[in-house]
Length: 61
Image (tube, rainbow, N blue to C red; front, side):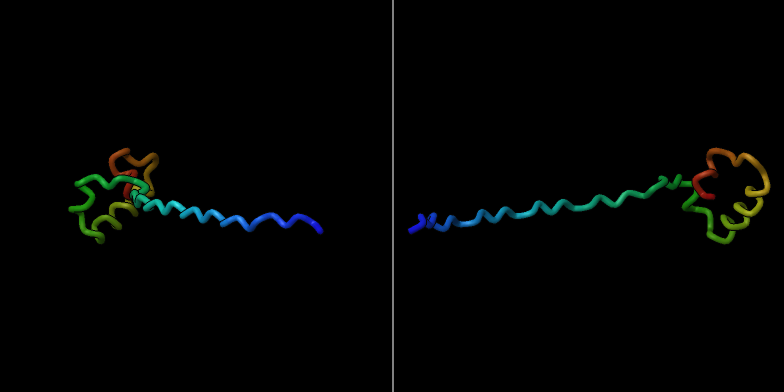
């Protein structure tokens, strides 16, 4: 007869669930939040014609 090994209890390891940090890709400057969307879109259309865009408004484009 073949030796049957005793059944070992299988270790169940809980999978670590890490909360995913939601970070904005580009931090929005406080000035940009005060500008309404319609004005922001008009500024973007004007700024696209120029090159290069100023660094402050580059995050809005």
